[in-house]
Structure formats: structure tokens, C-alpha cells
Length: 235
Image (tube, rainbow, N blue to C red; front, side, top):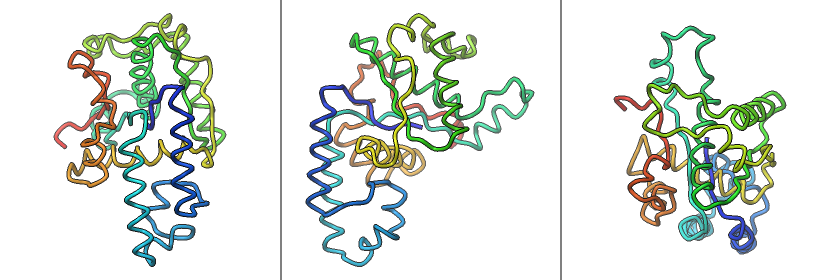
């Protein structure tokens, strides 16, 4: 789970730049990573018109590597998560999605606190049940703080409820696949995930070289607020 962490004043210029890219390449479909990589339907031309595809990929890379804001994420290795918590009774286990949401939002909240800003969380719609779960995670976080295991999370200095209440906006805002910033978030997330399994993956290397991940904007003392790779023991 992850995407784009961006200041409000940088939103409009980023959207303008993306609109210019879409117009230049006559793109009408949402820029979603899975669909682009599949090269099917609206993106079938990527596998046929190689000159146009090369130009598009080049411009898209330039946009993502020069845009305002940073990629952030909590990436969970599912087999590692299951191995770590399989011995816990079911009622004592957190859902994987809840863990990812709380970790990601808490880290973003800490950064917002540092800059004395408010944090608005935007989430892509996925389904009625899933969206309701996200709302519940969000409400619980603001009401009671993140009740991470104090024995294992103390070094991360978890925020308390009052920190979330003062900084995290009351409700997440949901968007559809047509959201331009949502498309940016989607394009950033896959390289962050893929790069942990394959550090030579080109789009991941490009983002790292361009310092477009949140880690590049942090001081050594803030390293714990970067991209979180969770349950990757031995991977």
C-alpha cells in the first residue's frame, strides 16, 4: 500500500505536467501500471508502435523522476507475514491491510507534524466492503492511536491519539481510476514493490537515482519514516 506524498501547493503543477504528457501522446485511458504493463486493450499499441511506445516511456519516466512529491509505501511480504504471525491465535492477529494502512499513515503523519501541516489521505475506491474497512482503520487511528506492540515498536516512537487528532484529517477521501494524482500514485507504487525483490528493476533504479522516494528527503535521524518493507526476513 502506498503512493504519492505531496504538498498541497505542488498538486496543481503536477497535474498540469501530467495533462501535458497525456495530450502529447494522445492518451485517453487512465495511466494505471498493470494495464500499461499488460499492453492490452487501450494500451495494445505499446506492443505494436515501438517508436511511439519508446517516446511515451521516455516522457513518462522523465515526468515521474522530475515531479514534485515523493513515493512512499508500506510493502508487506505475504509469506513472511504469514510465517511470523501464523502461531498467533486468529483473534489476536491484525489483518495485513490494517497493518499496512496504519504503518503508512503514521509515518506520513509524523512528516506532516514536522512541517506543521495537516495530512489528507486519498485512497482509490476498490469495493464497498474494502472501503468501509479503510474508513474503520482511519477512525480507530484518530480515536485511539496506533496500538502497536510496545515491546517491538518502542524504537519507532509511535504517535498517540492526540497527535493524529491534531494532524490527520477526519476521513480519507476516495477517488476513482480517473483521478490524475491517483494515477501518479499507482505508477509509483509498482516500482517500489518490485524493486525490493529485484533491485535492478529499471523503473525502481530510475526513481532512486532521481531521489523520488521519500527516503531521499529524510535526515539520518528520520530514516524510520521511509518506505517500510515489512516481514521480508530472509528475502
